[in-house]
Image (cartoon, rainbow, N blue to C red):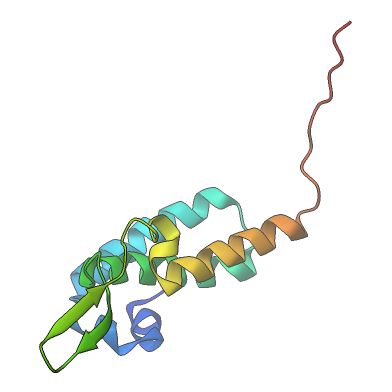
Length: 119
């Protein structure tokens, strides 16, 4: 079951206009599968899926190195360090997805654990 739509992904940014419907559908399927394993409350599932899909799609259209500075005279270009941004931190959509996951964890309360004392 797909938890979001191509139209909702494209509403996030114009950068997704160049990605085919078939490719976006594949990313939506992947993200839907991941989100379904989270057992997140239903009201969060579409939004989580939308941002994870956007993260996956964004990774496919951007290079690992982002230009952070350009100089016109005596042409100069400076790139970001790709080793600093990886995983969900690599895109603004992944960062939002991560923020939502952390928010959901906080809402669920303290983690249940077993305290053992060995004598």
